[in-house]
Length: 351
Image (cartoon, helix red, strand yellow):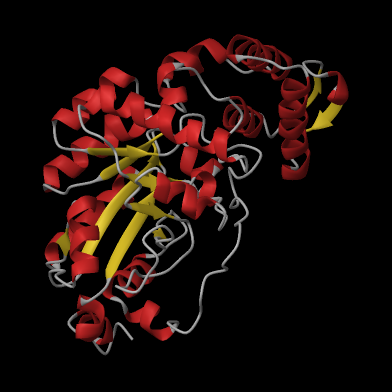
């Protein structure tokens, strides 16, 4: 398709130009995080390659607010694209923002404010990374009674089971942030991992409120991702997550956030009237798709770009060729599961 210039042809059609591609990213790798979880991290070089192509091909990279308004008013510029980054990792502040600024590209960060304020490694994702770093070892883990045995960490299933046991133990014991941090420290001691150096690196930390304020002042759009990275099925608790998140983001940016990203892509039809009552203008999912004018603004699909996506696949999606080919396939209409890699057991949902 690319060889016969079909990507270019589709990208110039009215079909593509009446639609919006929202690109979704998570982490940008400092070291080897993309090797640990290529479905969650991209390298700085890969992100630069994507930006270079978008610039060279003349795509219209728009701010989220502008793009959403233009989509539903039928006034999108040609070949419109939006870039979004989930969670608000420190690596976005340190690596992503300078790169985007160099290309003059606008972006939106969906910020989880609890982990921004309590700026320490998150239990699940950090345990998963530490265990992966020691994957060539056989160790005895005493940090959690349920897994107090000698384990071969070369097996992914074993590592995942340890992470699940840690989270279950922390939840059943009612651990707060301090106890969870101590649990990670104990795990690190069990497996011979340099926890102090890791914490100093902020490899898996979110950006601080001060750092978020700095990039907001520089033009980055900070939007809603819940306060504690979770979506309770109880309306009161759900509203609290959004309202706590919104209050803190307004304190950081001086602006009222109106756009939302479902943490871990988890959504349910029950959430839609709750979001409308909260005045949310748009919400993005992790379902693959291209946004059309008849889309539900609270269930907008994205294309999640990762190290597992080739440049040709990326171009086929952004040009509209692949979405056009599969335009008859609809994302599932219910509550989505959390994705692979750093998924359910390791995403920052265990506040």
